[in-house]
Image 1 (cartoon, rainbow, N blue to C red):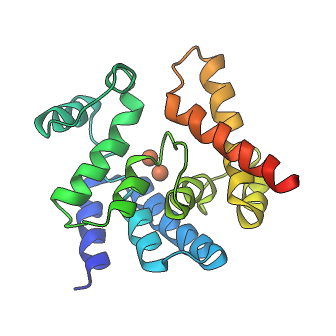
Image 2: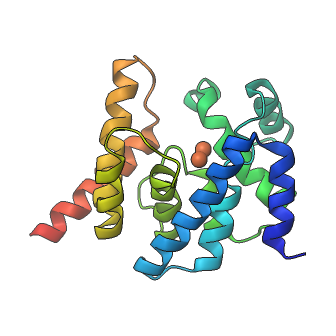
Length: 193
Ligand code: FE
Ligand code: FE
């Protein structure tokens, strides 16, 4: 069995049907973006496939997994349960799935918050998660158009919604999210000069 087939059977056990399909779709979108932007397609596929491996695990178990593995967490991370699954996913990929590629691990680790100075693969996974085939939120078509034109434009588009939503709901905005937003915005402005 190939590695990806092995990962699929592990994910089938861990995820709901809906999330499993999302994972396959993110992997496909990641390959599509990797082709356009010249990234490693195999890394993109696998990172996309396994990015949400902890998403359907109860938050309490996600947190204990992080504590068991002595993952350093900032106060914001500790207090934002929605962020646990990405960090768990990176630990799980390294420990249980035998992924040692730092770039893939970072792409998983930062797929929810983003961060300043994301690598090409990090950006691809971050955006693939926004545009996967089953996504049907308002504005997804604009995201899909931007994604194939400029990853930085897509990041600004996606994050401006995310950040607005977080603020409307009076929820914390992780500094890495602001870092990702500012960084992508700078890069777009630089290109226009
Ligand atoms: Fe996720
Ligand atoms: Fe996802």
